[in-house]
Length: 512
Image (cartoon, rainbow, N blue to C red):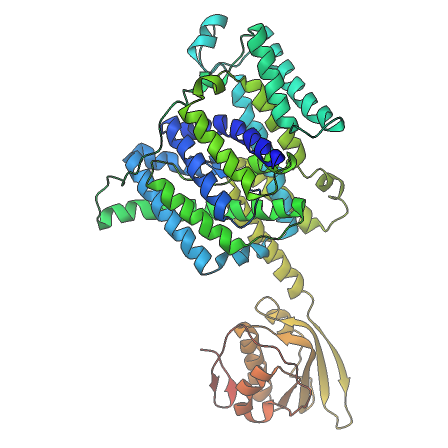
């Protein structure tokens, strides 16, 4: 229990600057991001699909929100978050989360690598002068990059934090290493009065309890048209990032989790957040990695993180604002090192070229755009590559039977991608009067395959020759039994189904 509580405290400390930074990205008040981190984190910790996961305000969602806030205001954002949550609940009820299994492993590797790079790049902004106090002391303008001694001091504190996190577990695991790193570096900075950027330089995190608030937007069709596109995009991004994080955490902890349950939890969390002045959120892979590697394995760690975050807002804002950003950056840099799939670099030359290209494509797309687009692109490219590989596999072995008929033994799947290759296998002009097509080593997959068989029958009919089909699946048999001599009776037909049902025209097979 102690480990869970301390892990939750570590996560809460790391959540503060992240939530504030993402609120700035979205163009809203820092408390809007902090309230989202508290509410989304608490609800998903209680009812989410996998214990140990951490959710909150994220950059992937913030970059989508910024244009909505700029054009229509923050109230429309709250309404959008409510609708986003409802859509996610629907996805969970209809069990759409199971489709995450369609994400290939190379896409998963590209996802974690790209995310590690994004987390790393997000920390670079902490090496800029964040506020007036620091600016005045160094004669620098806010937003200018640190240089000289301030930069050296910042880097030294980051390195010290990372060293503590790396070395401490070799001696004790009583206190999570990231928490110890933050605590020791914070004490050094405060004790010696070191002038370095701190959490308070970003913004004040002081506030009250989140209050129930119905978004003040017109309840009409025009409002719905404005918020629906954003809600759809946010819901998709949130679910994709959450489900991929669920899988990644599962690989580390060796536990199974419910994808549909996670969808419902994210939806409930965002719906509630929208009514309490939060910007919405989803699973956070960086904080989830901090939690898991600090020993957090149960729901208690996630609940503790959310509760500590609320305590910070209500009572301890002054103390938390003293924490140096260098300590939190050091923690996140260690997350980057732990998240990046370093073994993917060693296997690039050992895996198929297509998989290597997909991995690199997803990584680059994640960095340049966002996680959802990267994953969708990776899945589409992987699917196209799979279809192409299967399309080139179809071929036929031919022989002549005792009756003088030419037998084509088809090998490989017959589907939309291989229909042209299938058609090229046959020579109706040169074949004998009776031709048999044997599908024992093949599989008829879709309507395009059925149309290809129909077209082949028409070619042989035009030559005045007879075509028979053997070893079709039972559903193909039912479709073809009205086609007369096309179907040869067989007692060992394979028992699999087509993707959809098709109709049959008299005499030949046809789709509708």
